[in-house]
Length: 250
Image 1 (tube, one colour):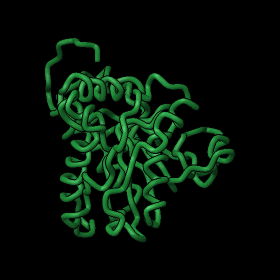
Image 2 (image 1 turned 90 degrees about the vertical axis):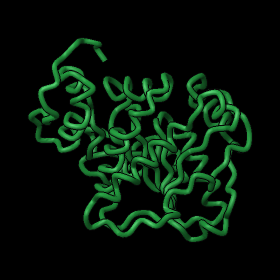
Image 3 (image 1 turned 135 degrees about the horizontal axis):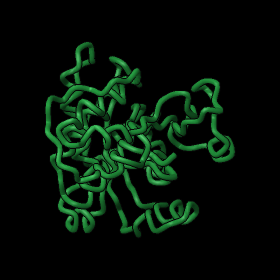
Image 4 (image 1 turned 30 degrees about the vertical axis):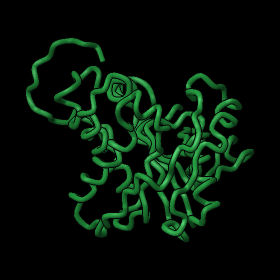
């Protein structure tokens, strides 16, 4: 963000034909100036059927990108709110690394919008936030993805025509990080995959048999982390695993 002082007139969306851009602008009007808000880039169709990578080369959202064609994923589809750049990237860094946890509420609102857009009234059976290793949790003080998931569910409950959300829809403990891993940001594409392999375990397989699971994370870079989550969930008996992230690299 630019850090400029600005007077908040009212949280009115900037003029745009894109509902996600308008929603971001309206939601962040009390936090960001109009210039910063205008830097938000939504992830909108057409995009890869599997990983959600957007591309003007796609004629429709029923195609696979080259990466997914050559290396199919364990998850069925991944979707994201916006590109991991500009104001969204700054907001995530403030939230995740500077402890501004109040940002989980407006960011969760954006996630709820995309989740509702993708699934309509029939949601996946279980929402699972990607867990932190207990040591990382102690160092940071909170799991940013779990906080995003909590507020996503709260916003979803306000939507009309959404099937009743059961108390077990958000399952924080279903996945556990069973071993420490180095930061994924320090790894190359190949290193990310090997770094995260075997890092998760399912705590209660009986709860996910034949279930549709939605894994949530803050950022999708190469997809290695969420794909490993999907692998262990499918191995434990899940029927289908999808992914939703706040941002993704493009």
